[in-house]
Image (cartoon, rainbow, N blue to C red):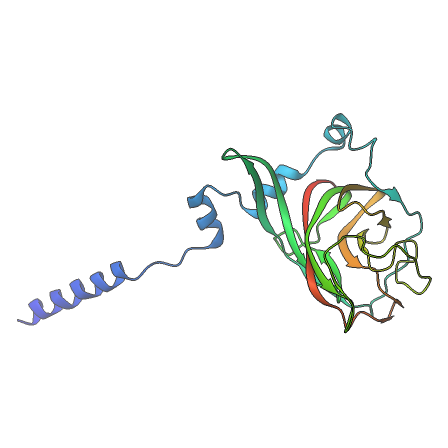
Length: 223
């Protein structure tokens, strides 16, 4: 009888194991659903310089470049942001893939590549949507990329408009203009970052009362 009880125990354990679902990773779920992983999207949107020139991105950047990049010191609050893969479809067919980042207006949001490494580029294309953030008590909830038609010398990015969203290539340039979908290009590569333009100086910013979020999608990069 002991051998029979043992057989029952083994069979029961096998049934429990079969009934208990095996955890799947996000990458496995993406493969099973036919979605592209972060790594696959990154490979897809990374362009060579030749490809960028062929598509006229190299010769027609969407933003005027600001030559001077104010140094962002170590005491300035930063937040590393990881991406999720997204696609845009028409008639059931994907026509664009990108990496999407949800940004916090309290910080300078520095983008990662999905493997924990900086997302570096000399040139990148982006869209910002949706936008929903507030600069403090009593301020409106902004839904526009460039909500205030004014400048302030007290702003962290003085050449950009007050409270606009600012694309950055860290250590190189930040970019001005009021288009929420555009191309940014610099002379050298650096980590892609985004922030809102609020009052303050490096190490003593006035971002702490900001709240909400804005979402950036990167559609193409040239390392």
